[in-house]
Image (cartoon, rainbow, N blue to C red; front, side, top):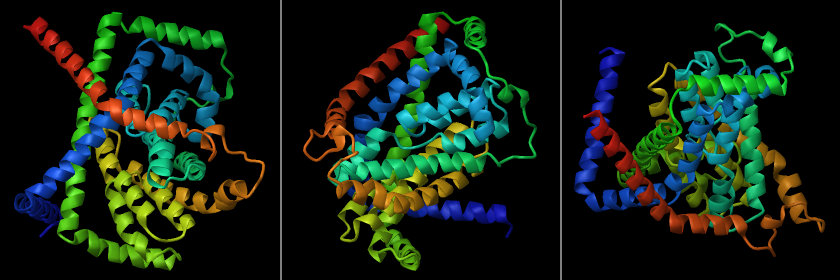
Amino acid sequence: MNSSKMKTLVLGCSLFILAFAMIISPKVSFTASKAGLELWWGVVFPSLLPFFILSQLLTGFGVVAFIGVLLEPVMRPLFRVPGIGGFVWAMGWASGSPAGAKLTAEMRKKQQLTAGEAERLVSFTNSSNPLFIFGAVAIGFFNNQALGLLLAAAHYSGNLAVGLTMRFHGRDSQSENQDKSRKIPSIKEAFDEMHRTRIEDRRPIGKMLGDAVLSSIQTLLMVGGFIILFSVINKLLSLLSLTDAAAAGFSLILASVHLSASLGLPLVSGLFEMTLGSQLVSTVDTDLLQKAIVVSFMLGFSGLSIQAQVASILADTDIRFQPFFAARILQGIYAAFFAWLFWKPLYLGVSGSEVSVIPVFLREDAPVVLGSVWSVLTQTGPVITLFSLSVYVIIYAKRMLQRK
């Protein structure tokens, strides 16, 4: 039997087993599906939608081109990507995954990036946003405000390390004009490029806004489907005891690097969905440093749920998914290492010092600002989601009637 037929057999059997488990345990599937839906419409949708819409408007009005010209001398020598990669990187940090993949795919479709540049760019522009790291993980799960500083430093340092590592990816591909990176551009050149981009996009403002809303909500609907799907798969695998079997293997790996074997099950869950994995890690009775290392790895790896979302976005382009997957493994390893490296200076050193260098919103005697923001978001998120979906239906229906 050749590899293609073997792949068909494995996929078919796996889907059959999952479907059978769903049939015999509908309550478990429903509960998991509901939990995924609540996460999507309460947090993911309202937090990502504004960034998606704004990024498309900034691209249409030429602001991204303006930023790209100014950042060319920085981004190309460091990461071997054009200056517009700086905008994608910043939006990826601010809004979280899969924003970086969506922006990279759009720029590739517009021929603003080569395939090699796009693969390098997407590898380090998808990360967890600060609100999730501080509000959900550090405060929500661990009830430890200072831990957020350690997790964020490890996560974004790992992200930077991945970008510097992936600059060596695709060295034999056709490179762009390197002379641009040696020349310091002027504000006038950047503005001229911004004006040219705006003029070339002949869409009126109303249509541009409508396109941004439609495209953004369509992407987020796809994201919601993946979140619900992987939430159900994770529960079904646990029901079939496959998660426990995998956890036993990962426990041996953890023990080999002097980490508690009890973190094996949370790690397996986190490989599928990092939110659930982080929550499970917080309940394990073991050393906090070990928890921070494992959570940092999961945040860097991002979970198969987010990776499936990125794979779906990249499928419409010639950007390969394999480099992105390899970069996620690298970022997980880097982030875990940085969590260990920063433990003393950023957690023990700060906690034991009378002069705190932790920001005001992270001090124990101060209001938990990010935790409050996260709480408000989860309460108002469903309303924002329903309102946005209503706007989407109205715009979509109007355009369909105009076509007829």
